[in-house]
Image 1 (cartoon, rainbow, N blue to C red):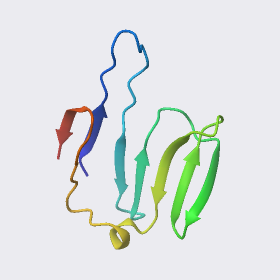
Image 2 (cartoon, rainbow, N blue to C red):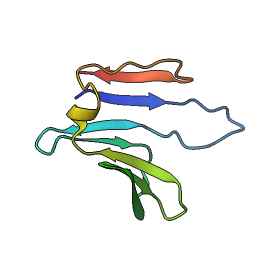
Image 3 (cartoon, rainbow, N blue to C red):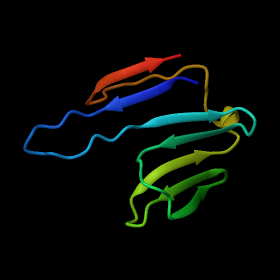
Length: 92
């Protein structure tokens, strides 16, 4: 699975940390985890069968877990469209 890092550049006046989105596929469990924040998960909610949203202590989404991912999404290709950021790193 590619290590996909998408970075958003901020102006000096914004001074916010850069968030990195990571896609992690675990073949042994056939699960795809979309990591949206470096914050730890404090709560989780299953929103659909096999789709779990993780939240931090403030209620912000920090990740999405997709069970049986290969049956729900095509994992052979990742396509990015209209991303308002510079793609820093794409590795296969």
